[in-house]
Image 1 (cartoon, rainbow, N blue to C red):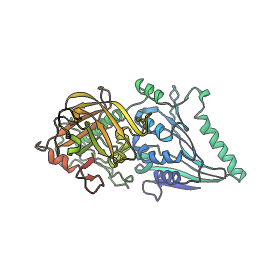
Image 2 (cartoon, rainbow, N blue to C red):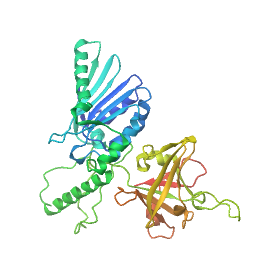
Image 3 (tube, one colour):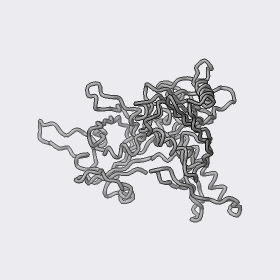
Length: 405
């Protein structure tokens, strides 16, 4: 048994989970957590996808306090697959579902963490959290009794007879969202922006009262801290010395937008001879970009396998607001190819090589999932967005550049 504290300790909850998901010796993963967000799921998505190939997974999640998000649960459900179980626990009385238990086991041993960290980026890496880490030898009768007691509680939090636990399906999660049990990521961010606004106002009105220091903490892996900008709707905050707030659990660190330079293959028409077929209207996005933030595109939770082509996956009927017009766009991807495609004449129309495609996520409440702009090479802000296209495709002859923000 050992005490573990983050973020300054040698081991953080996210490090512990990543290490154990990579272990082939475990045949079981059980967890019960209060809150789940995309910011946490993105760090474990591919690991859970691989882990489920050789182990059983069963997770219970709470939806109290409007913290757990719809997208977080949809992608967690997709990561663990149909052979695993995701349960939603909620009591309509005033009790909050608040455990944080993570258990790996096989026939002889179990490895357990119980503490304060949720399945969010803050809970996994950057928040101040504390845990007890316990290793159990299941050949030891006392350890086995303790293990069985833990399993008993984990089972209780996934027991439908309590009338508080329901096994998650995509349809059930959609119903929870539609009936205001689950906020979207955008709704949570909006609430966080309001909190940030209040914090800035407090800094401004109490500029002489600063009893607390501001110390850096180690960032989550591969996700450097992104400062929260002063919200535009706050007036009178132009003073240059107002401090920048670092992201916390309320800001999940997922990217809001994607930018990419367009090439002839994206916006050209190819064959123009009368009677000959033109090139299909497809925007080619590198797989590196898709895999940098798969949740941004809904990969793989919202994609369906093509019944006629098992190595192709599609996300049909994606509503995008393209330069002010609502367009229905299809996404498609082939894991064996180098690109991920958006098929739409509206995206190709009016663009030329060198222009920048700019896509931002929307919460869907206005009837579309993304907003799209084409930044012309002559636009005043072209250089600003070009600087954010700071990644290459990894292919030697490709001039395409892309990035997230």
